[in-house]
Structures are given as structure tokens and as C-alpha cells.
Length: 443
Image: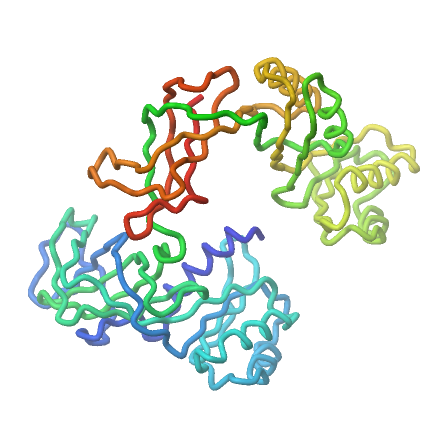
């Protein structure tokens, strides 16, 4: 399972399976109920409201950790005993198995411990083999605005909600600290105008990551150009030798140096061959399981083909993995086989010694296409000199301490040209965070 998918599951489980909920200090502990559809709310009815991107400040970290991870262990006691043996552990608030959307078994727990012990506890949790790729978050008390605009989409109702006390318990990322400014999403239950319950979880840490801004189209003057071309794209990776491609890039006219990196999104692929080959799926399971790079196998039959799905260790190159599978089949006189290759991403930087960046980029594009790497947009590094950025929507002025913004432009421009950019930047305390700011020419 990909990290992103697991993170999504974390939010779902941590929100849905809470035992007590995350309750505002001003409210009670009654669960929120969904109002009847198309009926006006009566007195005492509990209404559900949502609020997104609410800015809050972390007042203190609470002595609670929440854990979720994939597991192959079916004995919950076996997992609990290992967690309970970790120094600093105090107690379980909750411990259970859950099922992920793709039907994988997950272990979920909420434990209590002193925040000073969190780092050592998390380090120990990552060594428990029964919990794979654990995601760990914590609880915090946060201060929210006195009044928040909330919405009930089902009733098409939007209103300002005022809290008796502007504090909430919220689920925050493990890296979040006291006094951090964060953004949270709220799910609020209201009865007779009073908040009775609310779920809250962090969506962005403004202190650590800054406040994001995006301007889709802005005219800026190109201040300088570097002799460096960059590219990135997603593609179906057929197993070609990345080092060989990189060496061919270096041989292009006008190229001084080159680096590329290929990352497989999910290290799995499938191979199919005729059912009449005499190599049954049972045979394939026995033989393929002996290959050291195989981590997991799956089998199916489709349109008179045997299909073997193979997950492999990223310690091995896909080109070597693919060749080994081919060898197994061809040793059995099976030549009518095909692969469904994995999706991957490629990023590259090409240093040029030529002033003709257009010609080099065209030759580079043709070479990449010959390797079935298509859809890439090649850009040239540059800079835009500026001491401030003006937000075109709110009119706020943000200071650029370094007096320049990194830019990526299509090859062929000259210094001093005005170019249409997509500007992405982050700010903190009315200043631009330089390493998170980039102007990308619209292609």
C-alpha cells in the first residue's frame, strides 16, 4: 500500500473510530446525529456542520498517541504485549483491528504516555515487526477563533458559530509542536445553538511549512538564465537501463553533464502467458517464490492466459527482475509472453555548455522518446529578481529577503523578457520562504 493511501486511511480511522471524540471544552459528550432529509430542524435536533482551513494555535501537546499500520498478525494480544513493554507506555485507551478499503488488515490503537517520552516510544514502535509502516499522530489542545463560519451542505445552510470557549482537542501530525500555528478541519455537532461535539484534525502546519499561495497567471521579467535543463514526467517503465540512458544524454552535442533518477510508483507488475504452455499457476508459484527479489505473488486466468502478479523488492533493478522472469519462461520454451510494466516517474538535470538550449532540449526530447519516456516538458533554470511579491487577490505584500525567485522557463527565452508564469510560494510572518518558492512558465 502506498504511503499516501495509508495516510488517508489514518485520517478516516482516527476520525471515525474515536471512542470519545474530540470535544470542545464548552460542549457535552452527546454524539452528533444526522437530521432527517428535507425536514426543518426541530427544537433539540442535533445538526452537523463542517468548517475547513480554520487557523488555530497549538496550546499544548496532550499525553495521547494514535497508531495505525498494516499487520499480518491475527492475535491482538501479541501486538498489545509488545507495545505495553515499551518504556514510557502507560495504558491503552483503545486497541482494535480494522479493515482498509482494499481489504487489508490494519491495527489501530490509542495509547497514553507522557509527551517527553513520545520520541523514544515512536522509535520503539517502528521496530515491532507485527505493525508494518506505522503512521503515528498525537492529540493537542488548540485555540481556535471565537467565531467560525460553518456549513451544512445537506440543508444548504451556512452560519457563523460562536464558541463559549475557543479551544478544541485535535489530532495533529507527530512533528507538530506547542505554539505552532496550524490549519484544521472541523466537524461540529450543534444543538439549540450550542456546540455539543466536534472532530478536528490538522491539515497544514503553517509554522513549519508556511502559508501556501498560488497565482496561476502572472507576468514577470526573466532576470537570468542558467545552463541547466530540467525535466520530469510519469511513464510506463519498460525496464530500460537508466545508466545507459544517462550516458547517451551525456553524449548529446552541447551537453556537459547529466543526472537522472527513476522511481517506480509501486514495485509490482504482471506477466501473462498461454494456459496451454504446460506451466501452470501452481508451477509458477513454486518457481517464482524461489527468486530472491519476489515479495508477493498473485494469480488469475484471463482470456486463455495465465497471469502472475509480482511484487518485488526495490533492492533490485526492474530491468534485472524482468530479465529473470523472462529467463524462467524461456527455459520452459515459453516465448509467447508479455509484461504489464509498472508506472514510474523520472526526473533529470542536464548541464549544457551550449548557448543553444532549444537545440539541446529537442535532441534530449527525441532521445527520451526513443526510450518510451513521453509527455515530458523540458525547461531551463533561471531567476526572477524581486524584493517583494504582491498577492493579486488580497493585495498583501510579501518580502523576498534573497531578492530573487527561482524560475523554470521553456528554452528559447532571453534575459529581460516578460513571461507568463504560474507562481507558487509560501509565506511566514509576511516574508517569502525562499526554498519553497518557484515560478513555472505556463506551457
